[in-house]
Image (cartoon, rainbow over all chains, first blue to last red; front, side, top):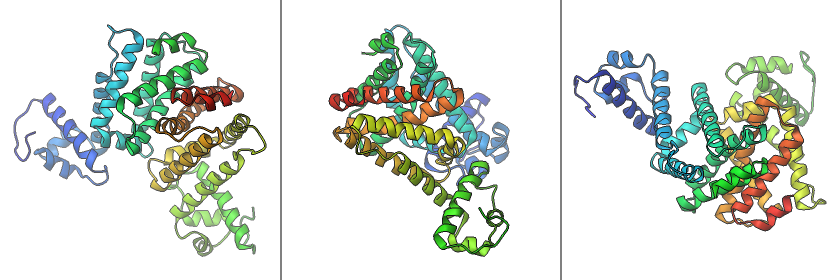
Length: 200
Length: 200
């Protein structure tokens, strides 16, 4: 990243650089700790140019989270060439790998959900899309119990991840298999027995 | 509640009244919206007397949440006279009833966890104590998978409750049975087959 030097850069590339810088800065500092002046200095650009890309610090912060969410969605997109159960296992594996690599960013994201409405909305939208994708991928119904279970399971995952990051006494594979087993059991409890059988 | 009148009241009773008032006020207003002057006016006491009980608005807010958490813990305490599975079902029923009665307070509690570290710590402490109580009550082990599953299930419950409060297309009994079924499946996935059988 070109810091401390005003280099000419295409608009898209500059924006991408700024979002990468934001992901890094916000994993070390809270939003309140950083000023737009400091961010511009870290990026090696003028404050005016930074404001040209992002009209406010809040919009910059939310844009970095959206970029992170898009990155996660890309990395966890199910492989259409795999059977549904295997595709889900592979997506879950990719998600756990992302959390391991981006532990601080992941924690900050969950923590900031309570204080930043845009973040809460982003997380809710990701959970809605992901739970719909899971039910569809497994051929489950969208009846209320299945919907509640798919959404609940994503919360379960965040809780189990918090426990895992705190204790680190399960391997990533153990955690993945445990999460898949829990989803299977949860779908069975919701009366979705066939899709549950797909998972194993 | 004696409002608008400076009545003499024993210390404990005054404190309890103030906490009840707080539960009501904070379910309608955010912490930022209320001043200590307004709270004192609502309570019908002087600002000085309010500060005598609670040194700051933040401490008052956290005390009202602690009182609510203590109320929930009392109402959901397992009945030692019942078999473990039935005691758990009864506790869960009591919790769902509390959420129905205190929907706004419940939502606010979860929402404020991200912005108020004391609230996040309170919720984490309640989840730790509750998950330990569940595992012990069901005679499950405290091995890492069982611990992760019990904690994850409490998150699952909050997610399923968010879905339920949004859609309201399951009865409370259906939701309770679904949650118990999910816990049973989750404990089985964690290799705790006997306690899981207890739940049904």
